[in-house]
Image (cartoon, rainbow, N blue to C red; front, side, top):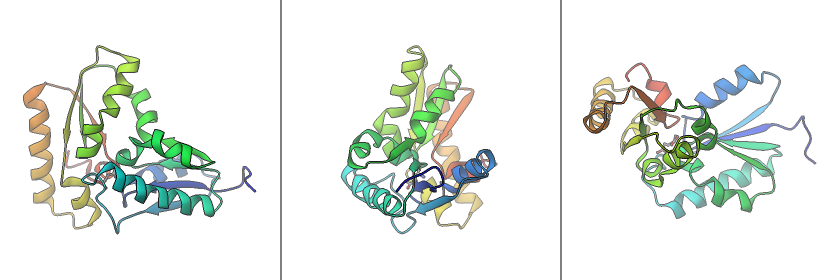
Amino acid sequence: MLNAGNPIGVMDSGIGGLTVVRELQRILPGEDIIYFGDSANCPYGNKTSDQIFELSSHMLQFLGDNGVKCTAIACNTISTMADRLRPCFDYKIVSIVEEAAKYVLREHLGLIATEFTVASGKYAELIHEGDPECKVVGKGSPLLAALVDRGDFNQHDINTEIRTQVDNILAREKVENLILGCTHYPIVEENF
Ligand code: DGL
């Protein structure tokens, strides 16, 4: 039986969603949280949509079985598939991409995220609902989430990957704001 005292679920492909848990604990200190980070299968960003759907469904099922009243999909990559996942579960599912897109500044934006998230076009689609003129210049990183999830914060590899992808964005558009469209990236925000 679900009630207001039930926990909130938070799920991610790995440790990145802990950045979302930190914020939830700050704004909702009275809530219990069950966190599921699938580091065994991380990174998700290089997988197919069917693979991501199957792995994510297992996480949502596990959280539902443990009585969560809602689940926040912290992972941007999984969030792009929220419309496909929601009909399979009978509890509330919140997508970070849908929420984040409401709050970004309405001007030309850079987006760095997993290759899957960028290819999905979901950020651009949702941002254009707010401002059709806003230009979103995206670049996927095939490496950064896995480098962070592994926990060996090799500064050289991380900085090289960030530099490569951000330079690619800047070569196309002189954006002044960059969306860190992957939960793992705020962990290395200082490197950006
Ligand atoms: N943390 C995930 C995200 O926010 C992606 C990391 C991964 O590739 O698994 O997109």
